[in-house]
Length: 537
Picture (cartoon, rainbow, N blue to C red):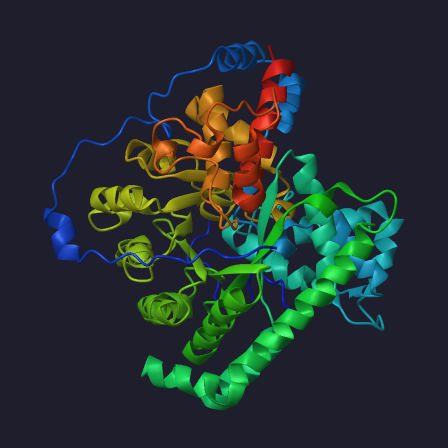
């Protein structure tokens, strides 16, 4: 079975108050802490993602249009929904599905809802009632929505605990429905004027667990890896994951009506998978899931990368954090074609001991070699955080920022969030949703929040959207010349002089786009920007 859970059983919070060929990954050497602390300390960059790039007349007119909409909430909402918003790179599939659709899936599966508002298997005994009752009982439906999302969550429960508890409550509704869930999420992504999705699932979870328990833990990581691959055991688990993905594709195409005269919008969306690893599990299970995910990324182009999930403040996650970073470092040497993005720094003062705030992002970047990190909220509490930010900027390690999730789980928002700190040091930023179904938001909400809270101009919003495709693990080369993201997004030589949205690509540019799906997706977004700017003069 393929699990889509973001979390499973975990300790309560300490607080009381969210398909193509893969490019070969070049591993970057880690910088020893001592060397980092003595490196030259240049002045931080200005607070802008693309530095001092010239504004086109169309962008200036659109910026004026945005300014004119202040105080007109409905018009602003429409503006941000129509804004081209790149891709979503930090998205947990089960947490991204709308709560209403999860209830529908529970009803279709004949599930029951118990006294704790958890979906359980039929038959519905004493103290439970059919999930289907929610289709005609509005009060029951609202009770489930509150239990399965952040809508009106109880005042006597922390946002952190309620958020993570939702996954266990609706979890059974996600069993064997991954294709249906993807159809729901893909349609939403397209409706939000996005062009690409990377979403997280846990492939072959039962088979991976069984293999881990069979081989047992060995502190010698090389020896442990040899045990996993011996006799083709690891590849058999990967075979199961590939079969699950095949079944998901079939279910998705049926749910989205892809092979009918009226396919859903999501049928054309490029979707790729990131393999989740349950960081709260035992070391042998964590290592095995890592190996499965990385081997899968090398074998199946639908899968790209590995990520660690479950609360970063969990007891086991904290105790084994450094070990897990070393595991990833070792396995990346074995599977260099697999990408790596990591939840790191999803922590805040009061949630963990002060010393636990000082090294998570650092080790994710310098030890594990993460190409992107998710959340990164505790940046300024990290040891020598300024040098860490400079290193991330130099290596182009992007930060996936889901504002609503950070506020709901950690209580971090506005000036308490390190958004501007990352920008000052030139660290690439991409906006993301995390778990929009649970959070009851969409990506347009995140862009509008960023614009209002941090006073972003239209061109800054545009470059955030561009960054979400530039730092995606999409196969092929970029539309943009190397390093141009820092100075204004200049097209590669093959496409210089072309104007997306106003003319067709030249023969040379068309050949380049045909051979590079990433560049082709970025071209689509640039064409959409041209239309958007014409409509917002």
